Structure formats: structure tokens, C-alpha cells
Length: 145
Image (cartoon, helix red, strand yellow):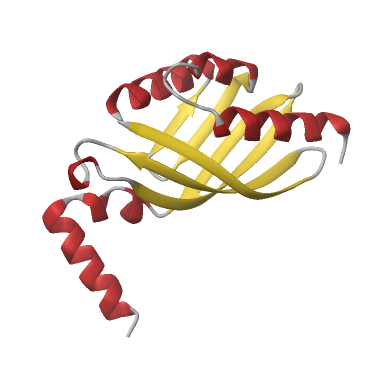
């Protein structure tokens, strides 16, 4: 792994570990202007669209923290395993929720050009909706038998 990839990963981990609505501008140093960002519910093309997404997201949530557990990288890509702990006023009356996930990152010009998050959207959102959450947890329990 090159020192450039190591620097990008270190910057990614540091940025996300300290991310809050007060320092979203730090993300611009991490992402390439032509970044593509995907998760189970969204796809953003370019830094302006991604910045708008983060700005709107952090305006609506109570809190959001990331803890990185491990990562693997080579010169052109990385995989980062993390836990996100967040609170949203419309999910379980704002109580803290924990979601395990993984990000696939690709690099260009010493920045992240592609970012794909993998996580269980049901765990993140649907299980936090009062009636729907009960149904989903019941189905998961039945599938586990």
C-alpha cells in the first residue's frame, strides 16, 4: 500500500470519527469533486450533491457518531468496517440506534472518488418505526428459528 492510500484512509477515519454538523466542511478535503456516493437508499454524483446530502442529513438528526473497527486497503481502494450510532427524532422517540456497516472506497488524485456504504437499511430505519419495527423484528425472529 502506498503512503498516499494510507494518508487517505487516515484522513477518512479521522474525519468520520469527529464528524458533526459543526465541521461538515472537512468532508471537502476528503472527497474528489467528481465523487460518487452510494448507500442502500441514495446515490449522489459530485461533491455539490454529496455536500447537500450531508448538510440536510445533519440538520435533521439529533446526533451521529462513527467508530471504525478495521480497514483493509491497497493503492486504489479500501474497505472500512464501522459502527454508526445515531439518534433521529422520528425513530424510537429519538433513542440511540446502532448500525454495523462497511464502506468501499476508491481513490483518485489523493481523494475518495467512489464511496459505497453497505448496511442493513431495515436495521437502521424500519425497525425504529413503531408498528413496522415490531413486524420486522417478529419476521427476523421467525426466520432465525
